[in-house]
Length: 364
Image 1 (tube, helix red, strand yellow):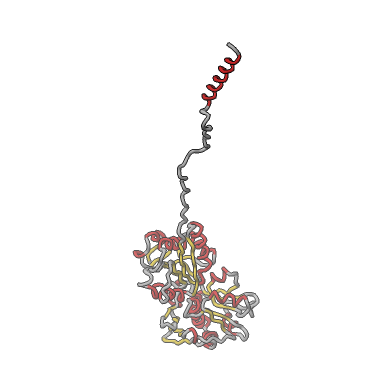
Image 2 (cartoon, one colour; image 1 turned 90 degrees about the vertical axis):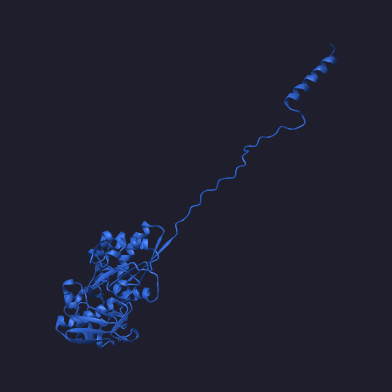
């Protein structure tokens, strides 16, 4: 075989081998890293629980203890926002009964305001859960603060240059209780001029006596007309603290628990006039206060009340709030803040109370 034939055979062989590798017309097809065309699955949405706004209307003297209850509620229930609003107890009740304000919980410094002003349309039951007592609070810079005591306080308040305060009786139980203290003091100290010297001579609040019972008459709030050189009157007892701290007044009538909570010095009054002891209920009852509305309030031991109004928008969480107030946990809060809890806790209409609260209560 000559060289030309061998060359032809070799070329044919190479061509055949190339055909086995590829057809020579199309380049090799690239294989993509991923051929999936599936739609990605979206991450599940995180649904935040709806915020519950729990509206609590309460007496000013309940501010500190209920602030602690608020902290407990908001820590346990992350979606709850407790919205507290303080005022004098009578004014607080009128927000519901006259202004149609929604309230999930209502706390009063005088439990009797709940049945007398709210039953039957705005509340159905009332829990009695805490006590208090009237004192006279002051700071060391007050005039004659180094002299005042439980036997001479009314003489000190009457001295020239001394200015004292009390809250508006039409708005606040502490205000009408201040009037009761001054009138009860006349019998206790055997001095028939105490009310006249302190109250009647410095405001248009008057008192009449009928067969051993005294009725203090309070005019419309704008007509109380305090002698501002001698007396400061504010809607709520808590508002008088600023007057004391600024030196505008030397003394004011207040609850013992408030004085303790605000680190104020205070004079403890004799039990027959401080409205603290149930054994003196008959003595306290000899004084009544007729408010501008025509409502008459009788002297009695200081007892706080709490209820869930009928217009509550968040009853379940309101029950949890009240439950803490009347439980041992709540009782410790009140004790630590200088306000004795009532144990056992008393309710007037057990059959109308939410079932969840009944284990904490005793029927009246």
